[in-house]
Image (tube, rainbow, N blue to C red):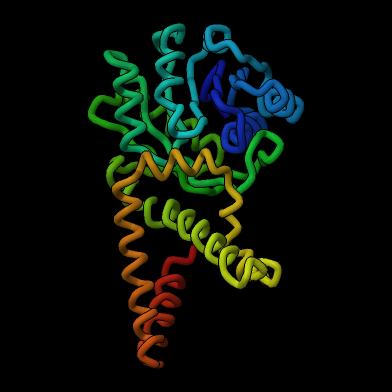
Length: 287
């Protein structure tokens, strides 16, 4: 496979960043991989596992002679980090991110890059788990999964091609859409489930005299698995995509109210209607 970069910088070598490094290395799709991070222990894990070739904590050293950058940090830190990296980044280096919110992030990154914004194309690899850090990374985490690109009018065609080639080389199925469309969709199918799982665990923990969770079975654990995700990461996501998330929560509230009203009225047909609607919709969406 033709390398997608001679020297790739992964800024933020957590679950996604380290999994990307492992996937590219396994496919021989990259030259050197430099990992930039704050935690020396996590960088050591990433290097020991083969996700990166060299670990750096100094942005100036990390950006030296790189030709492609992936920023895989929490969404609230992406634009500030890009603003720091661009000071020493080679002028020909392309930049992308791995954030699950695109509108606010893309706009902030383009402001940070200023006249060089053509080198940036937003990305969202749709993969992950409730685990975090390089220790949780997997070579196959991205394989066959969808990755959304959100180029703008300022994104150079060459940048878009390079970023598409990066995620394709990692085994992903790449699609393109606007940042607005992306954020509306993922408010419903990613950010809303996180909010609901959080609220569900909290409601169960606060009810049943505090003992309900001790009796939870596999169904409850499956539905609430993502409630174990890092709080700081999801705080930033929910705030960055606030309006679409609020709209998604309103839609969820309306669906809950339909079911509540049917139960309160003893309306068996209404309950069955809601259950059947959900079952059919889920089966239609199954891969």
